[in-house]
Length: 308
Image (tube, rainbow, N blue to C red; front, side):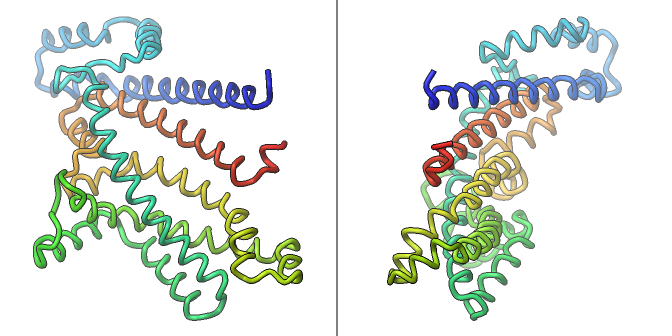
């Protein structure tokens, strides 16, 4: 087996183990926290209704039989049926997942791009007004709760100025406000991590040697600094993408955005534990895929990793 195939095989195997482990935790947490039938039907439900639902969900079987059946269904992509909507969970999750992907991609791409520009300005002009300004912007962006910023944006730009829609899905203008609210998170982290990384690379011997050979500052930045300093930034972006994708509940509720965050809110209110279980598994798969992409980007950015 050649090295590339071995790497891909190893990472796919590790990803599958991670997903199975996460699914196992979700499965047992859904059962050790109490009988879900009482949470679904309420405390005043009759015993007959409880027994009927337990039989429908397979909860009247032993825990090991339930777990084996759960894994067998998971192996063929069966994530169960929603208790509230009565349709397969995957049919509910995939459209919402696409909406959340769109919102997260726009927010992460925009916030990261602005954050890296601020990091570059701060690192190359240390001690200047640009450096202080980039650090201040990162601190403010990191301290603002996204849902609070979302409410402020709706008030000013949707209600008062009427420049942008206040929520829902439609053309590209509907993405702007929620993306700005979420984009403050990657902007803050990328600015901080990027500045530290760029400052570290600027002090490397090969950068000093390039300057001594007469390369301009622009050539040094483009040929040596940007690519070498991107690995920590890519790591942060990868982690933030997965975290933002799975934690946009409040922002999606504020903007009535039909993503997995608002779907999770509906599942919690409707006590739909099978849907919540399926969403947790899908989120774990997304995390694994994002980490796999980040690993591949490492080798593109740093050939030494690929050589090893």
